[in-house]
Length: 468
Image 1: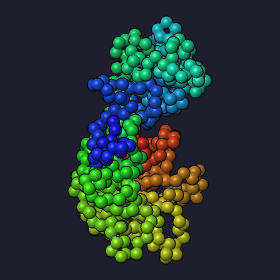
Image 2: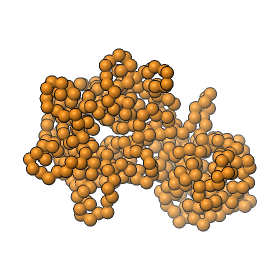
Image 3: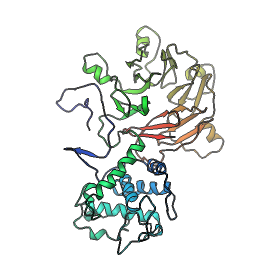
């Protein structure tokens, strides 16, 4: 599904924003039918596959591997061969009766796809080889080029050569009558995958986006607003669309082309503020415009041209703080200025020149934390310092030098810090609930947002991953 504000060559900008229903990423809609490609990038991650299975209340009968490890194998092996490993996991669920297996194909065979059943059941030495065989068999059906290039991993599928010609199908639906003689085989597999997607929650992964997603904010009813770098707003789940920067521009308002950097919901969740890179604030719904960095500069205040990176509202919704990349804090409305990194540096504190990346307010509104890209935490007002990544590194913990991108306060006290590869660091009373690290190699991590029970991680390709 293509966003309505997408600019095509030679076509005028049509509309403001994106109003997207909750869709099934990775499925192509055409003439009232659905098609789920066999080849392609995983939309879900291992944690989501395992969490859905746990939600069914079943107990898997696996041999030498945990459920979570098995889910990760499907993601890893699928990515290696360019096969949708997340959908292959759903196929394995169907083939093994939710990993309860059968007398014909018992657990110790590590045969998750009924390969060779019922007469010549294949057996594999471990779960990884069994998953790899399934993935390679799927590729044989869906990728004609594999006959020429060979598989990415060493060939372990014993029936690979029996698929002839290679590339005879493109979708899981078309496996009916091929992988299995049943005429509804593919639809049953895709049906299971649809339930996994629904459990995982709203996401834009698998859809074509015109610009990378840079931030997310929680809406009513479990919905989500996503902001892209063009200032476009995507609505997922129960979120309501209130407007976007491209929409205002399309209606004739004179708005520059500064990159969108942050979106923050009002306390009522009936509106949101969008912050652009110049420090401009764009208010939608019941969000009130209370000032901006360019406005103060235009009024003669000596404010430099440091880019804005984060916005946090007060609990009343009648104010907000804007953080710039130098660590400067700009307070508007009933937001109180409580200090900044440059202010502390000016008083002689030994604070380096690391880029500031995020600001989060305390529940009282009488304090805030500022996060820098090295993982340093700077507490102001009643914000309690509960630790930092440099502090843990100094204490001897083996923590690498991956930049961090966001923080979120935990309702239990403390805070979470998110790094650029999806790793989560917990401080104070914040519980560890899961991580994207190693699941989405090469996909930029955009944002971290706290929920009532945990947190959500957003990715630049529109992914939304919920934990807790």
